[in-house]
Image (cartoon, rainbow, N blue to C red; front, side, top):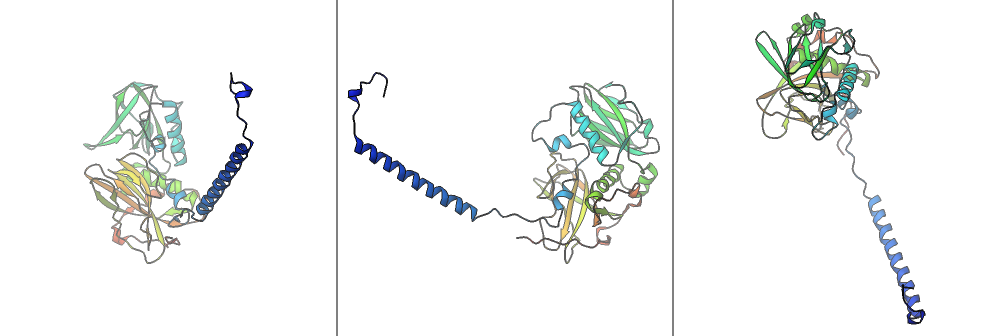
Length: 344
């Protein structure tokens, strides 16, 4: 009864009420049939799942990333300074990759940026110099000059970065605010070992990290490395592997210098374009097993190392990178192939 309405003013139509109830029932029944039919049709049309090129592709390739991009990988926007969080993630990443911190009580004293940092505890060894901003400090890049040649390393995270070093070298860091530094060693690697490989220290360290990440997942590297150059251009660029296999798949790890941001079904996007560690594979028929990369300018160099299957859970071999040698792609000895999963 509406407010203010007299009972005698309300019409009484029993027949109309019965008809309205009947129509309501019919509408509900029709709606139920339509919804049931829609659900049945949806159930009969499942989403196609594309199988991995070989068993474990995602687990293996997604384990690979650049050492200081953890916050970048999980963020699609601008990363705000967060020194405590950035340091925790970076040091966790380095520990997983086989690095150990130099004996010291925390970080060295703060220095106002821009600043030069020394690494005396790196004498006779190789590793990274961890730079951590203080509070709201912002790191932009680091520079290392060796024999008149300067290498520049972009700060992927504004609060923490890891600069590769072999020996006690001076690191110049640009940015705002203050920062401190601390040495992390990679056991088994020395400046002499890296020099004998003829490869850049950053590349040798990255390949040593890849072994530490993949051996527990059932893949071990061979000793040969070949280099592929990828010219810059608009949009994603393919990595031009020329070796072919008649059956199965051969997995590789590529260390990319001068390019990055890998894009592919089996590689996570890192949102950085100057460096990358990626998994790729050459398969007999699967053409989706190799990601593309972005090369913003110049030419990217991809240092590619083949991997073979082993038992899962194997520990990394300290100093294994000492056996690295550079060969032509055509001369690399490919390991036994993994079973290829065909496209649906």
